[in-house]
Length: 344
Image (tube, rainbow, N blue to C red):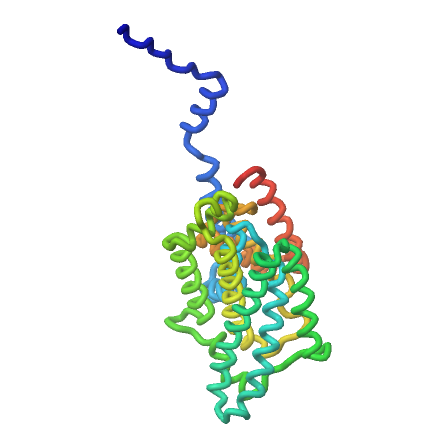
């Protein structure tokens, strides 16, 4: 029998050839996005030093890092939520309610147990537990209740702050003076010359980076953010992963709050205002895709520090009023989102 005729190879169309050429080129835009936050931070430090010589001092650097710790810790948890394709608008109100609850508990537990130290330790544990419970509630409402994350967290934003206002009777909840002095080292103490909140921030960031990049859970979070339906086809328990993601964010809020309480020793209806804006801004500025699927803890940390440096420069100089700090952060979010158009 004669051999079967061989079919000629398909010809590449002009569009196909163009696609191959584009894919062959180095992804310089992705590389620019990766190093962009670092370059921005370096540039800001240079500008800050030029505008005020006090900016480059060690004391000022420690002050910036200490103030970054609260938002940075929350931003680590927010990074997981945004990568998974979600959002949480309630973290500031959640922190306020946790702070008020911890203060009330410590004030009650100290005389009840007869041990102020035990009361403070139990209060710190309570902060983390409450954060996890609130995060669990968010996760269940979003996954089992089939409600959009934006709606759920917008609702709890008002609920959390309203309950704090109710508990404080419209005023402030204040930690007793003796207990405040006992709790103060959690914020004001240093280890090897570095404030305790900074150490906690570093530890949380390292753990977050390991979870995101070195565990199956971290890969599932990124897969869900990239394409939730495909993740379901791949036998990923999407609901469980989402619930754990919001629980993780809640735990981060609880850790940040237990560090924040000794700073002022009180909680009021204004506590934590705009923290959600700062946390989301840190994640987005750090290079995490707003639509989900891609991001990094390292970028989030750099983004949080970058925003704190902007605030610090505004405080040290008179170039722009300090009252416009939130406006600057808002412009940063919009600008970065504009640059991320179409990115997934």
